[in-house]
Amino acid sequence: MTIRENLLTIGERIRTAEQRFQRPAGSVQLLAVSKMHPASAIRQALAGGQILFGENYVQEMVEKAHELLGYGIEWHFIGPIQSNKTRQIAATARWVHSVDRFKIAQRLSEQKPDNTPDINLCLQVNISNENNKSGVAPHELAELAEQVAALPGLRLRGLMAIPAPEHDFGRQRAVFAQVRELQEQLITQGFALDTLSMGMTDDMEAAIAEGATLVRIGTAIFGTRH
Ligand SMILES: *Cc1c(COP(=O)(O)O)cnc(C)c1O
Image 1 (tube, helix red, strand yellow):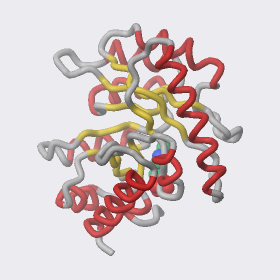
Image 2 (cartoon, rainbow, N blue to C red; image 1 turned 45 degrees about the vertical axis):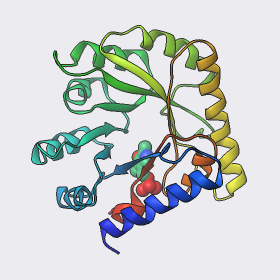
Image 3 (cartoon, rainbow, N blue to C red; image 1 turned 90 degrees about the vertical axis):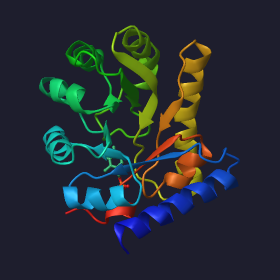
């Protein structure tokens, strides 16, 4: 299968899940996770109409963004963030999904170049995954949201989660439901959030069932990473 064919297949999977779980048509966006795949693979996805790309490593994102200037790519940073890398992220990414502490948001806010649009942010929540050190604990989420929402140059859009791998559909759904409930609590508290970044190649349907607005798909588009 080519990358273009894979994109068509994923588009079908998304549309089918939207219908099956009574989600409005077109309410789930596809983020193509291109980490560890070359710029040539991204070019093939671009030819298939894909515009949103996600990267996990700052250096790799910056190099690809440089090589692919002029294609109108919207870069999403989705990996762990070291504070000494925030300037490069702020200069390249339109979205950052993996903010889990105030210091990082503060640096992104300060370092965003002038005359560029606000950076769209999701707060990464540590849900179900004790092995994953990334992500804010659910009981600290509201306080972090409040601090981040007050920063200039950033727009808090929603939550991101990477649950522990789980094969059972019902259990996948139960974890994504917890993320949705956290988002609903924040909305009740007055935050204007519209984005739930959740679902990868193996749990995308469960995430869509629980309200994902953006699924992050790598393997099903670009193949196995080496
Ligand atoms: C690698 C990665 C993905 C894509 O995972 P696949 O299983 O290849 O679809 C999604 N989100 C994050 C945060 C990732 O690091």
